[in-house]
Image 1 (tube, rainbow, N blue to C red):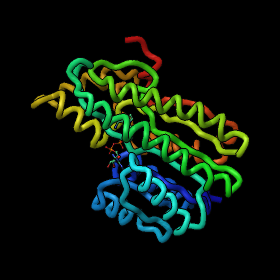
Image 2 (cartoon, protein in one colour; image 1 turned 180 degrees about the horizontal axis):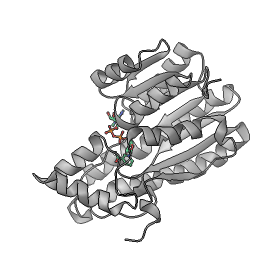
Image 3 (tube, rainbow, N blue to C red; image 1 turned 90 degrees about the vertical axis):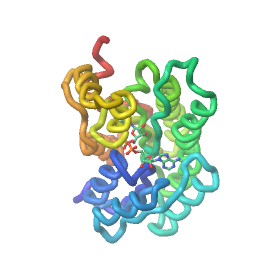
Image 4 (spheres, helix red, strand yellow; image 1 turned 45 degrees about the vertical axis):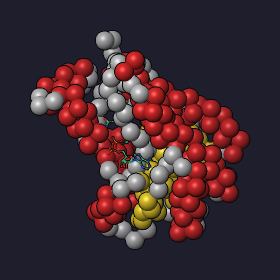
Length: 257
Ligand code: NAD
């Protein structure tokens, strides 16, 4: 028996990186999956690569109320309900000391990473209740468990996501809705490549080496290593886990600076 047989899963930020790997793994484990994101080309490629009947996409901006209501409605209409939500869409924001970050830049990170996550939970709850419960997984970060310099909007937003998991877990418990956060360290994908490009300015390899050197396991995670934690939290294997914030960071968050 596959671990997510006939479950319906919505994955935001599913057109790339962790979200795309999670969609592929969930589909392999029998789920009907809808990926959500802003970039239609990436979403189409994700769905084509998975190449299974019950996998689809929709374009939406997770920070918008109407878009959130629509993508959840579309998932229910296409697949007959909702059992699993992976609220994973997120942006990094600017790398600068707090005094140099424009207020608008802070607002845009909070709109996607926090408001988008809160909206997803708010509108998913009634659909999960109709199924007698479900699992919600929020992508936070190792930056949601501790501080990092020149990243105040991102770190603030990812701490908020951990808080959201804890608060929503209590609201969800009477309805058998479990809510957990995953906290990846550096992952080998576009987001980290952009970080290296932004901070490295021609010497990306040095930035990568420096970041990897701070991780006790001395390497980045793959998207699939994060997806496997998502699978555990989505499946009944984690039936007693709710309100947790789970590092998948090679030891980063437990090591001293
Ligand atoms: P990624 O940049 O490939 O994925 C982010 C996805 O979110 C993209 O597909 C993007 O199109 C989508 N997105 C952004 N804003 C959106 C919006 N307003 N509406 C809909 N979709 C939107 O990188 P990733 O690593 O796969 O990121 C997934 C999550 O993992 C993010 O929340 C990120 O903060 C978190 N994370 C990443 C790392 C890392 O090292 N890559 C580490 C810790 C946490």
